[in-house]
Length: 488
Image (tube, rainbow, N blue to C red):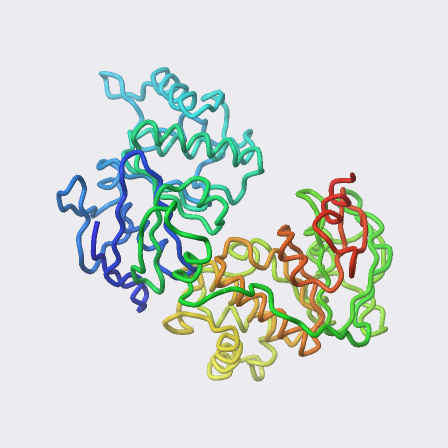
């Protein structure tokens, strides 16, 4: 494939990019959010049509007017967010749209179950094809999605952030599956922001930046530092900003907060200009506590004090009124209304400021949205652009801008850099440091130890819904975080 061009929503998403895939090899597609990775995947799978250029299969130019045409050519994609149906069986999900038929034109249920079993066993998945999908765990659902992709006898398998929702053990199993696919001669396009994955699994790399082709080659011939420089157009030697941390007066105090099932006896204080990290393993109760602090769920007991005054938080509106805002981990489902344009998302919690006598003032909405999106260097064609069309990093910026526009005292950032690339991570970290320097109190929930260590003044470690430790200074080390999080 060479010289593809595509325009999406007024922005030139691809500008003459090149991408080459080889049988039996993994090619890592690398680039910041907004670099054009998703657009090229959708172009290869027939969802988008390029404005120019050509796609070559076995040296012959072709086009994919529909997703079915791409599938018929043997191109399939496994996305980060698996699109499956909980109420259907495993076999029905795998063969949806191309179920085997009997000679009378009816669905061959027995044949479908048999073929589904063969496909799943081929990737090392011992899953009953008659089970409902809703009864499976996340990892097995992911294997069903892979089975569905392979049910069309794919020649090209595209994996878009396939390990995002998997545990360490499940990631290792996915690596083994990739090796099996390579042995079968499949050409694999692997998209990931994790450099350890790329250097472990990929044979080749291709780098995009701002919708343009930057370079490609063999992974064995390149260093991580060089790839980062190709991605962002600059050296990112200092991922975490140097901060002159000098917290001010106490702004938030939480005392003995409890929930019947999620957490117990949580208490701490937070000062202006401080970044307080929350670390813990999956299921530690960090996000559940943050949702209670923001009023999404209700704590059974405990107290919250803002600037020395007791605050009763029964809903997110109460939290916003006293100056607490929450940027959730799942920005697409919980943080934004993706069909709405950027400006409406940003101003949604600030309608009192952008309306007069019950009528919205459009000019004021645009002014407020422009102020905060420019501050975050949001990349979009216009403020009328639907949030759902933006890259993950830019969606995160919209959600942060929305809450900053309310002028909060405390901002809770739940996994603020999850799913975004190294360049965008550096920008988010720099912005967090700026917020703290301006006196905003920041709570950061993160599962990434380097991020916790690099950004936090203090860290609270949670385990099984309780505070296992508070660490600062010389005690703030990777070893101490792991020991307390795992109960060692």
